[in-house]
Image (cartoon, rainbow, N blue to C red; front, side):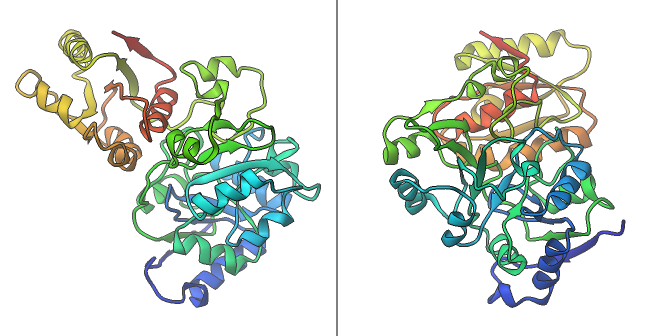
Length: 357
């Protein structure tokens, strides 16, 4: 398959009238695949109401078919066409966080294909804030089912180069809309019970959700050993069950107090014959300066700025592969704010290989 690459500036006026966006929308309507930017990561889109088109997503990614997809909409009115009911709590969340990186899991209407939901009676829906994504959904005239636009299990794509590397020749079109702002996937919140359940931490923090809803519960898949606890269970959200976000390099996470983490990183580094790479905060890298000579040390960001760390995470994981690093020592991060989402991705990328100090 020949993949067409388009470059569209997000700040372009009247994007919905852009002829290339209209062509992309036609590809979606005709059952094809289009990779497109969102504010979180690049998505791989298909007509969310066409089971055969949705199956092409799984084929292009090599994605397990029991892993649910998210339906992306461009207008609040589209939600009622997809779900059975919208509660006051859901309306309140929409008011605060849509458009944006929050996905809501709700009871689906019968016409939603099982290929989208993994056979569940619920569907995940969000309204992205990226102008190119919104224009594409509007041009397609249908909700767009879209996971991240990468090979299954690989780090999610935050640059169009990542998408081209993973999916060139497997999709009809790739839209280059520049770097993704958030750099980490949406938060997924199950709103089908009285008590909201966080299925996946993401671009909207737990603290922000609690300010709007009060208490929420963390799903078993969000804890330290979520993958092990979900063996044999159908996941209710993308990113819950399978090993995700992984570079070719092996990751080893060291968690604990900063000084103990620093000493353990130094110990493993000095004992290793692989000259491991290091992924850590600016503060940790500064404290290691002069004590290591690794050719690959990457700064995730400052501890006080988890948003910066989220935006850089997947790009840096891919860079380790480009530089042929085989082992990466990773500093564990605080679990507050978006830091919870960053650590969720890192733990899954490491296959839960964690040393507590």
